[in-house]
Image (cartoon, rainbow over all chains, first blue to last red; front, top):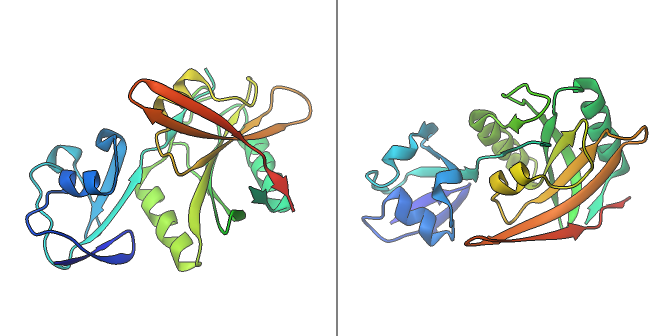
Length: 69
Length: 134
């Protein structure tokens, strides 16, 4: 099926969860990633249970933080 | 990595404007050259810590994409420490594709340095990235 990932149309396997998709995209630390699904930020606790559907628009990026100490 | 001179100036001005609070932002570009600066909100509003707002991150990522650019670098200031990655930075900066720029206000003349961070399990590798102003 076809979905849009970070602005680019891609073909992925059916039945893939958001967690599975992040793994496919070589994200080693999904706990440090924010996901937007069809314009809404997805709660991290739902990454495993949310299955990607045909036509979904998925954006993901890493949380950014740090500090001088 | 090349960076437009005015972007370095903009980062330093942003750091000085928000000092003593840590400032932060994204830089976008293409072909190994940084071309645009996006100041970001430090939602921690702290002199010792910064965090991006995820909603603002997604907004800026799309804005950069619409400009034909991609996010390539994250900058933040160290108001009172050198331009090196702190333990907290190394713990929280996890995107291996980004060049992390630190603007240090420790000395009278601000210091700007770039780094890449890669992690494999507990092993963290830090690499200096030369920033060539153009």
